[in-house]
Structures are given as C-alpha cells and as structure tokens.
Length: 555
Ligand SMILES: Nc1nc2c(ncn2[C@@H]2O[C@@H]3COP(=O)(O)O[C@H]4[C@@H](O)[C@H](n5cnc6c(=O)[nH]c(N)nc65)O[C@@H]4COP(=O)(O)O[C@H]3[C@H]2O)c(=O)[nH]1
Ligand SMILES: [Ca+2]
Image 1 (cartoon, rainbow, N blue to C red):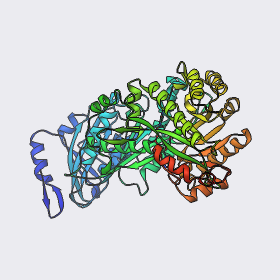
Image 2: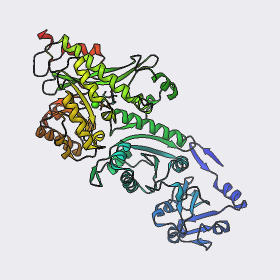
Image 3: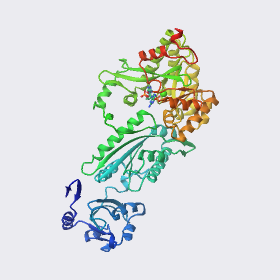
Image 4: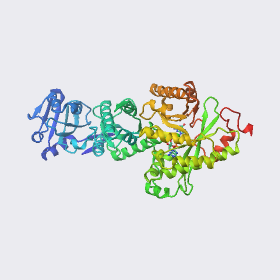
C-alpha cells in the first residue's frame, strides 16, 4: 500500500485505513489541534486503548507504563505528511502493543492501526540485563529499519568475559553483566533498541546522536566496577555500521552480521578497539570447516612459524629483542594472522602443541642469531603463552630443556603471560612462575592494564618485564585515563625495577610521549611489524644493539 511520488514514499493511508476498518482492525486517529485521540471499537475490545472512544494526549500518555512513555510520545509528535509512525509500548496491565500509522496532513492528523504484541513479552528479555535477547532484538531492528533515515548499529563485545567468569565465578560475573546492562540502558535515548545478543555481546540500534554511538557505548560501559573486592575495568571491542532505512534497507540480520565482522576486526586490532564495517572485512568465503581441516597437521608440516617483531629502546631506537608472533603460511590463502586461526587452534585443543612449537622454533632462531652476531649478547626473544598454558604439565621441564639444547643464557627466552591468566589462581601462578624463573626463563606480563586485578600482587610475582597494552598507548593522546594508566604502569615498573615495554608504538609522536613518561622500551608498526626470519636478519644487521654500536659496524 505504498507508492512513490518523485523521491518521496507515501503510504496511501486513507485507502489502507478503509480496508483495515472493514476487516475489524483496531484503528486510531490523532488530531493534535483538538488534542483528541480516537479509537474504534476493535481497539477497545483488545483492551489496548482507553475505554472511552476518545481521549486526550495526557490520558494517552498515562496509558503507557512510565518507562515506555517516550515511545508513546512517538505517536503524538507532529510530523510532515507521509511520515510514518511506529511505536511500541506496554500499556497498563502489561500488554505490549505496536502502533503504526502515518501523518496525513502536516501536524493536523495522523492515523493508523494498533495491535497487541505478544512476541516481546518479558520472556524475550535477557533475565540478567533486562535487554532484548538476540531474536527479539533482530525482530525490532527489522521494523525500525523500515523507517526512512539513517540508522546506526553498534555492537560491543566484552573482552575476556570467559576469563572474568573463571576469575570471579559465574554469579559475580553475572553481576558485572547486569550492571553493564543498566548502564547501557541509561546511556542511550529511550527510543533506541538495546539488546544483549550473545553471551558477552551488547547491541544498540539508534538514530544518529550527533556524536559517535561507539563513544557513548564505550564511556557507558568502560567505567570501572567493583565486584567482590575486585576492581574490574571492562574493556570492549566495538564494531559499528550504519544504513539507510526504508524500502531498500538491508535486512537486520545482515546488518548485524556486518557489525559483528567489524567487532572481530576491532578485537584483532587489539583489545579495547573499535572498527567501522568495511567491505574488506568480507573474507573469500572459504568456510571455517575447510580451515579446520587445513589446520590439522599444519603445525607438523611447518606451516605455522614464528615471525619476529623488534622491541627497541625508545631513546635510541636500538634493538633489544624480538617478540615471536605466530603466522600461518597457508598453502592457498597465503599468510594468515593469529586471530584467524588461534581461536580454532584453541577449540581443537592444539594450544599446547602450538605453544611448544613456537617456543622451540623461536629459541632455535635466537640461538642461530646469537651465534652469527656475538655482539648481540643481550638479545632476547619472547613467546606468548596461551590461556591456561602456564598450567601445562611439563612446561617447566620443556623450558629448561629448550634453553639447554639451544645454549641460551638465563633470561634470553622470555615468556609473555597475560594478567588474567594469572588472576585465575594467583597463588598457584606465583609458584609456577617462580619455577619457570628458576629454570631460566624471563617473564613478561602481557597486555598490562586490561585486566581487573589489584597491583599489589605484582610485587610478589617474579616478572622482569611489564608490557603496556596497546589500547592505552593508542588512546593516551586524547584520553586522560589512558595517559594516567601509562604513567602509573611506568612508575610501577621503575619502583619494582622492571623493564616496561609499550606495545603498539605507531609513530614518532607516540614514542616521544612514552619517553617523556619514562617508558624505556617499545614495539610497534612505527619500528617494524612482525618480520619473517630473513627480514629480521636484515633488521638485525642494520640495527643498533641496545646500549652498543651498530651490530654491522662491529661485524
Ligand atoms: N595496531 C597495532 N598492532 C600492532 C603494532 N605492533 C604490533 N602489533 C600487533 O600486536 C600484536 C602483539 O601481540 P599480542 O598483544 O601478544 O597479541 C597476540 C597474541 O596474544 C596472540 N599470539 C600471537 N602469536 C602467538 C603464539 O605463538 N602463541 C599464542 N599463544 N598466542 C599468540 O595473537 C595476538 C595477535 O597477534 P598479531 O596479530 O601478531 O598482533 C601482534 C602485532 O602484530 C602496532 O603498532 N599497532
Ligand atoms: Ca604478547
């Protein structure tokens, strides 16, 4: 029942209303000038309107439950002729109803239909947060997208929810989720559609707010929380996409898929990231199953190998060491970054195999470099331990054996462990870390600042390096909170006599800012990305060794 006049789409309301009236559908007509809202008999029979055949706007508002009044207002607000009216609210008595209609003459009269909406009863809401669940979110989004105008969909993924669960227990982690849900509801205008669409995923569909919805989301949800004596600093990966509503609007599920792709890209770019959907995020359609099949045996075939990202002294640019980062050289797809295969490796239970392989390969490479460049006596290589790997039986023996076989001195091979991995069981972690240190491993605390721990336990753990998460480095220029975190981590490092390495140093400005905060070491695209062993060799030849002359000059 709609047609186009020029560019404008107009619903032929009179014809529609006549047809519907004959079909005994509940109809309403609203005339602001006389402050009269009229309903036909069918509406009253449904218990959706006032018992009288007409009511004032005030009485109409009073029909809606207080928290839904803003939605009722949507029906009353005068608009241009042809504008659609869509509102859903619960009326007293608990029934949710959907009001749809159209403005017939500008500000003079609107008319439409009203129907009970049982799909969205309380059971469709997430119990914990009171937000819509995924299905209901999609259903409402679909309707909203039918409205002309720009719509923005933002999806936020709570980083490391699983680890939060492990550390706090489900009940307390649920409290965190509930708190986040109510913060979200308070942060967006009432007509926004809010959902908890996955275990750790929130979504908002809104009209342009005049500022970035990702920022609103972030500042609403990333405030620290205190639960069960823990200070929790939630961090989010955020994806955003916008779309024009109306006849040609994309389907809600498709829009959600794009926003979730953007979330993945943001998460891959670093915890606490945000990304806008872009075409390039679509992969070549090779299915996950195919990838899984390829992954079996990939480690054994030597397809997954360490690449090496330089870690440098910020004041001189001199090379201090490398971080080994896994790359999968896929026979058909080319080089794949860890975020495309690590989750699969984890699901397939291959994490220990990968960890052992990366450590052996990186140690062997370091040993080769040390033999070729005697001047580089202090060169280190770090490898990442995956979640739970610290508990791997035989890890300590494996480290000791690796150092022995490759004739590496104490501290040359570093293990990077994340804060939350330790927080699962700090007492146990302390014992394991100490045996690892005794076996000769260096220990770095990775992604520092993103966890939810108190700092005091650090003094009791045998770390020699703190790595500041790149989220703080990236945002310290325009976010006072991030700058404070960087400053206090650097200070903490100095007090505890630890090396502090900033991750994600992308340009000279960041390097200078970090130095002025007293940070000594950095790694990032500003120096070099992760390099193949051959490229790293070239870098080694050209680099200055930390605190010494160029390696090349010293032969
Ligand atoms: N935006 C930005 N990013 C930068 C910059 N400099 C370096 N990066 C990226 O930051 C990541 C640093 O590693 P991570 O935080 O430990 O994060 C790593 C680490 O947690 C994990 N990972 C990588 N290799 C291994 C491995 O062998 N074992 C395990 N368990 N995890 C690994 O995968 C994560 C992602 O690795 P990559 O994709 O290689 O991503 C690397 C690196 O390429 C920069 O200036 N800007
Ligand atoms: Ca790392």
